[in-house]
Length: 376
Ligand code: CAA
Image (cartoon, rainbow, N blue to C red; front, side, top):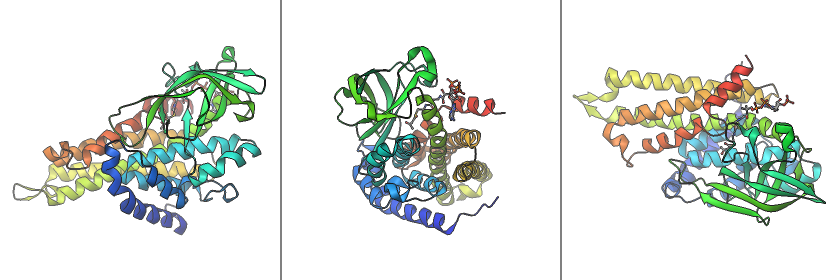
């Protein structure tokens, strides 16, 4: 196993790090106040970051999957909000069309998604179908050249901002997961109702909304894959998406570790920096060890995926461990900062709030354990 990144991958890391420092860091405060980072996404589109793994002939940057994961990792060190927007847009907003779309669907949607002109969203979760995604109740009934969709979705990342929604609905409720189909729904489709904006603990610049479909008519040409193939499309893309969320969690943990180590070197108590006192230095050593282990799992899963090898178990392991590490390391970072860590004057409280959801979305930690244990 070669643990070095290629020159191209290192260039991607440097480019994204420079961009995040210069363009995203000054905007973090605005995002904390709830502003969606439209202008940042536009610039990311110009840099080719909105379609990193998409082939050039479809308007993408055609870089390897590792470079994509590096980008999410780097963005999330500065802003987990921007990290999740890109991960959802690419892994589960664009990839389903790229991998399961017809030539016509690909040509119609992917170049616009890859350039950042369009933003993608993924609509699987429902009020009564979260971890048990296969029990979704949204229905799609074929009428001539259209499907009519009725139902509701919750916790839709990028909802209300997106131009393209990948929507899952049942075309044959008796058939369970084998009756679920997938549709490409465009913004502005009559019957697509954007509902409540969730007030979240963290990721304040990312939008998370409820959606309702009220007799929403979707052209039959927008059916993605065959009828009944929807659940497989969801699972296959979530598998890869989980590596992206793991990279986001890793970025948050890295940022918290760096902040804590920096503060511990400067903060003097009992006549010396707290970093020189065992209670804190051992804590930092444990934090750094967990971050390194998470990093290896994340990049190992990305390497398997890049080489086209099976990576479902490894993707779930990476997400399970990296999200746990993010929660643990951000908690400890606040402890290192003491009272200051509990204030908004330092970024560690934001890291802590942003970390928690990585144990919940794209499959909770309990679901990751189900996926892993099924493969043992
Ligand atoms: N690739 C392709 N097909 C897959 C697959 C994969 N990785 N995993 C499962 N399937 C197929 C199975 O092969 C099976 O088909 P066959 O019967 O033909 O073999 C079919 O899907 C059903 O599989 P299961 O019986 O395993 O399904 P299940 O109902 O027991 O559920 C589960 C499995 C893993 C628990 C699944 O429900 C799950 O992943 N739940 C979590 C949902 C989730 O991750 N939601 C995230 C929402 S998106 C999000 O969070 C984005 C964001 O905002 C950041």
